[in-house]
Length: 474
Image 1 (cartoon, rainbow, N blue to C red):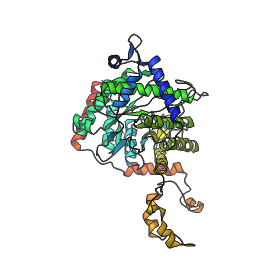
Image 2 (tube, one colour):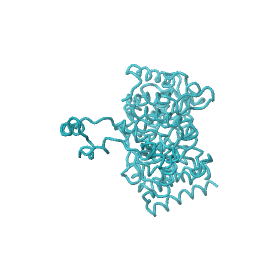
Image 3 (cartoon, rainbow, N blue to C red):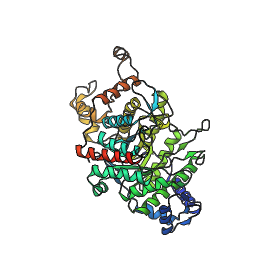
Image 4 (tube, rainbow, N blue to C red):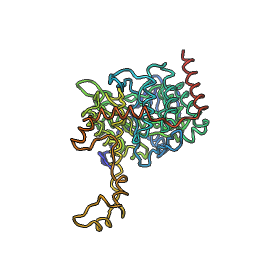
């Protein structure tokens, strides 16, 4: 497993973070969160809304947080078991632009695009999680998350995103998921919404996010606590300092979640990277982001928590060599470090601002190859192949051997669209580049793939909920 910090260095980051929490504290913008911290023994400055959290509260929070948790698709067959050593790949999240599949032009994303990405994710075999890949900018802001959750449930049986920005919106998503699950208690038993909680760097927890965290914790929905500290911008320029600040933000978020609801499922997360000093932009294809993911995965294991990383990002605007390079290095580092859940792995361009259908198809291949690498090499009587080596002997061949037939698909990653033909064969087939092939494949999937339908009565009920929310929003 890929590691970047020694045990001594992990301890240094941990103790430094505890000092920050106890001596500097974090700003907490939600009154109930501030109150539960005060009641538990944190030193709270109510006027400035700053809580200084003693180390014993951090210890207690970590002890209450489960070391594993599950997220289920609506069919209950798709299950992500966070914390058991598996690595899961997700589509990107909440882009505001899309590269049109027909014209190739960049334009604002719509609900129709969101639906298409849910269906595409449902079909891509190496993508485990159908996230809210793009934002539905053509529906009211208040109703947008409800419509997207409804369409997620309708268009995929894989696991999906929830939405916890604000109490009202969070309760809306819980209400919809409860209908699909068969009631609130069933939803608590088989969680179906993945919450995304991002502390505001440096060292702040926003009101809207805390409201959502409280509700998702109450309903036992797993929540990723993942800061996006930018080295040199919203965090120290040094990566060690960035780790200390990020760790303090994650730990304080965990403390609050466990004070709201002891045993609330949380994942230790990271979206932290560097700020490009030439442009002022966050850089999602940077090797430093990969390094932060490796360190974050180690810290999650240090605390016996499941982990959430970021990989597959790029600053490229199109599917080109830059995109392939940046995506592969960040995704590989996160996966080989043992990150349980890797967000932004599919479809991301332009620092996740833009989503691309053809890029999602390409990224599906990258995820498949990385997943094969993570699996490693099995060494046992079957794979050592002593019998077949002896049978073939010097100068023989293995192509006709039954052992080859039985083991090729188990041992070799066989890509769907990567071209491995000779030049002449490739030319006769049209000499298409990877982006052209991926566009054709995306079109084929969207034309042919039909997700397993959601129960008709359930569909009507959740659609009515979303329509009611939109109507009440005015």
